[in-house]
Amino acid sequence: MRVADVLGEAVVRGEYPVGTVLPGEMQLCDVLGVSRTAVREAVRGLVAKGLLESRPKRGTIVRHQMYWNHLDADVLRWRIETTDTATYIDKMFDLRRATEPEAAFLAACHARPEDLERMAAAYRAMTDAGSEDKAWIEADLAFHQSIYLATRNEFFWPIGHMLAISLQKMFSISARGHHRPRALVEHGDLLNAISEGKPELARAASLTLLGNAASDIDRIRIKGR
Image (cartoon, rainbow, N blue to C red; front, top):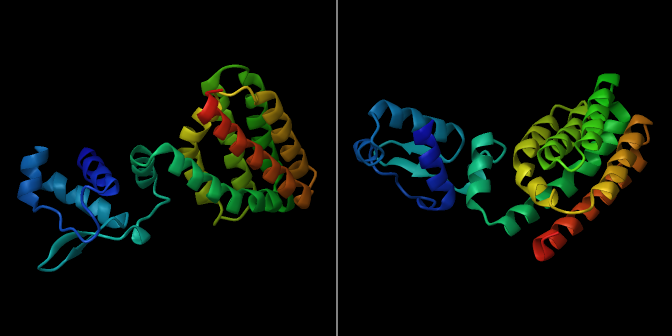
C-alpha cells in the first residue's frame, strides 16, 4: 500500500507524464527500498485503477487521465493532495451542481422511511454540533451522502460515497465561516422538501444551498471568514 501511494501520487502529480514508461522493477525496488513482490502488487493495483497499463516488450506505461478511475478513493485522495485548492473546489462544485439537485429530486420521489431517518439524524447532528468544526463537517458530509442514498438509484450511490471523501477539504474551509445559522435553515428546507415528497421544491432547495455555499467559500478564501 505504501508503494502504491508513492507511485500513485507521483503519477497524479505529473512526475511521470502520460505515455511515460515507469522505471523497471529492480530500479523501483532500489529507489523505494522494497521487494519485487511489493512493487508488482503496487503496479497491479494502479493498473486496476486505470493509471497504468502493461504492454508486452514496452513495460508499464502511464495512461491518459481519461482512463483513470476518478471515483476510486485512492485516486481521489491523490488528486486532492496534488491539485491546487481553487481548481479542486471549482471542479467539486461543478460536479455537485450537475448531480445533487437531481439527487434531491429523486430522493423526494423514492426515499424510504429509513432514508429519511438517516437524513434527519445527520441534520440533528449538524444542529447539535454547535461551534465544533469536526462534528459539523462530519454531520454535513453525512447529510449530503444520505441524499444520494435516498435516490434508491445505485448509480448515484458511488457519487455520494465519493463526495464523502472529496468534500472534506471543501467543508473544512467552509466550516471557518459564520454562515451556519443560515446553512441550517437551508439544510432544513431541503430535508423538509424531501420528507414531504416534493421533488421540484427539493431541487430548488438544493440549488439554493449550493449557490450560497459557493459564495460562502469564495468569501472565506478571500477574507478568511
